[in-house]
Image (cartoon, rainbow, N blue to C red; front, side, top):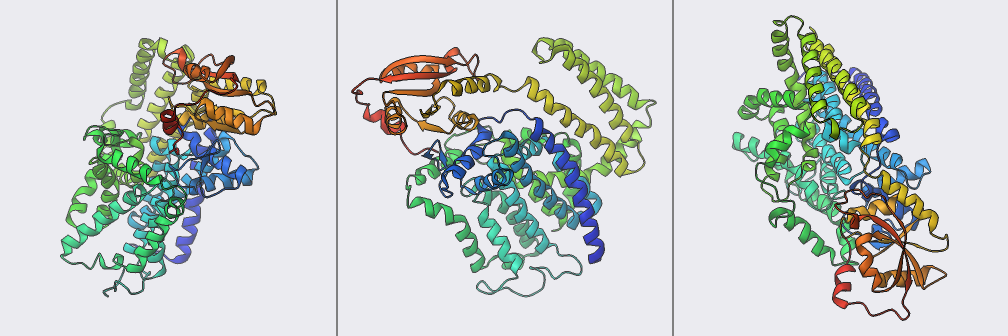
Length: 590
């Protein structure tokens, strides 16, 4: 590996960080400012953060005041800190900003890994490729637990690479010919490695993050040990105190919660066994063979070329190519064994694929350069062909395209220009210029997509209008009751988060009566945000009046699923509730 002086390395690192943060920050801040409404899934962490700030209870997350145990609290703390610094308690833009502030370090960590293994040219391209992969982009601007877990997983891998592949002038934590003792000492980076490995349980729950971080490392080390026919590669990681550190970090929150809510054991059983072999999110065994090319867009082709170019070296000897291939392939291969599969599980291996894409760009660019030069006016011909293809598609699906002719004409113009720019870039004699030419229309596509999506593809517009109208109709001295959404549970978070007033979660009419008596002046009347299909249930508890109904609710299959504001006058005395029913609906939520 080329030796770099500390001064040169420091200067180059700062320049690279500024470049990457400027491009990625500019890319991600557009949806922060002009993005569509957060979905129910995306509202989970922001709402629990909002309630933590309000209640001051930082250990146990709540939803509408009720305990919610599905996710550990650290991502909520992160969002809460961003809320506090900005002085905002609930905002889609600020919640997105919290996700962006987690995504940017992931890019820098990936660049650091690529720089150590392949040099600065590949590193810069890998960082920008990762930033513009559509799957990573989607989670970089949405405050879900996955982007926070990805930060921890990538930090584990970066620390492993720094120890396993030390610079020429650096004494690595695992370098040397000694035989580390199981109970002996290790350098501080090794302790940090185990601490971060345990911390992979702090974002999305137990085990999953640890598996995502450990899989490429274990695969790489086992392959090296088998090839060398020695346990030496494994010895530094067989460390009693390190595994105790990892275990303590991993179990800190679960142990604290089990004492108060032992039912969390049932949650873990349902979540992990359900995904593993009980059919939850069941997909066919070949699911990831289709999803991997999809999540890598628009860099799928160079990523696959990079994999092919690295395969021989990865097979022949332990080194940089083998580790990157282990990082890219371990997650889809391992996850294919489980019933539960989803494309966002691949988020944690995208850094490896981004580095492979950067490696594959040079041979792919060389091949395209030779072929395109054989075709006169290739860039212009390609632009015309893509314009005709886009225009034909627009005409055929005209009635299904939001924005109709304006969208079609704009898409035809942009696609033709982007094609011309990319094909022209592929004929540049310098790889960096070619890469910039390819990257520019990709960035432009994301920037143009954000306002279009917010204008035409925001499914929550009618629901937001309904919520604002409902809030204006509920007296200030009466609590806002929100019926738990059994049709789409995560939509409960959406309603609670997008109300300006704090909402109180209820599971059934009898609980509505109890909480109204505790929180309002008129204990016989309650205002409940529910769906139209909940009406028969509430009629069992009193007289129900429809105050306001949404004109359309996101994801509705029929009008019975529309959101409604009910005013309920409870029967006095209230008829008894079915015990079996209450036992089901009042369980601890997850």
